[in-house]
Image (cartoon, rainbow, N blue to C red; front, side, top):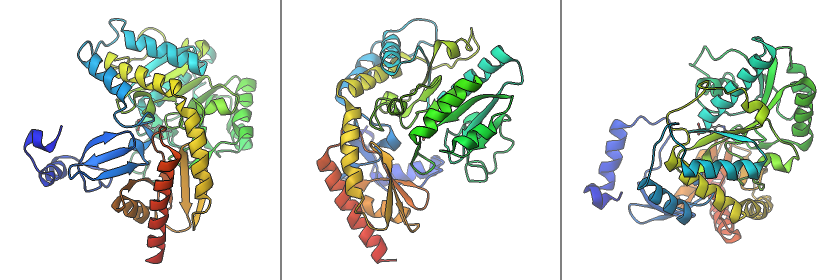
Length: 405
Ligand SMILES: Cc1ncc(COP(=O)(O)O)c(C=O)c1O
């Protein structure tokens, strides 16, 4: 939809949105009207280099041709079918994804939070079915982020922060332990524990990759104690960190993994993939959602996942991400962390908001994480030349912000 189509000006659209939409985040003062691959265009025709990708969603790039065609075709054929019939894209996506990541079954959902709700419910039902009603406790990590719905929010190990404040009482049965400390997780396990749930790289919590020893140690701990290992790959999954799933770089497999963000390349879709053993917990009507396995979103998902696999976008994420991380080592005032194209730049001062704003004024979109961190999560189609352009704008912005402090 363009301004001409509706006969309104940019200012009228912004006023309308400000009057009727409740924003819980600051909004940049442009109306985005078009996008292609790594560029977003506003209603005045300005082009912005996109290193945020709708918050790590657009792994195949904006308006990717294959995904767009699949959605256009499917929208004219069949969209919604709510569990009553088989549909072609849902079956094709299920096979492609399960076989590529070594899982047996998929359960479709609509978002990351909802996928994590399903993962938590499956683990609890597995515990109750196999060990009795007291086996429901789940241990998650401090600084984790698992979403904003109630169980996902409780699993989010950030007590006392804006995420939890005002939302008590949270859901019982969750405990937190220190990320990257196997001992802390070992100590937290009780007779009531059924699962351990972590992100292989804590993204929203500040860009902290798990160490090999930690993730492999958690897998061993779960095997020894009969616990399920739940991995939240909502942000890390589907090529972002340099392998198709982040866990593939650790030589382990979870019992259940959650996915969302990149799976639909901008069309809302989430999922959990799991082993046959874990899948047995979900029996007839024990879980469901109206839109799950919707033909339209699965058509987008099948196109997006096929594109990521066939174009080897995870390999590009590893190569170009490595190049960018190397380049960023020379950024003043900053420490660099990350994996593939999930990169955090932590500044020694609370300058992230000003740097994001200055980058925006210079036509580069980056993500702010808290007061000190800038996160770079471009589409996985990004090139080294794009990284050179982004680096130059970022460096110029950092110099300007620090010079004016
Ligand atoms: C690791 C992780 N889990 C879950 C979520 C929640 O996903 P959604 O915003 O789609 O509910 C996010 C969102 O950023 C995330 O990064």
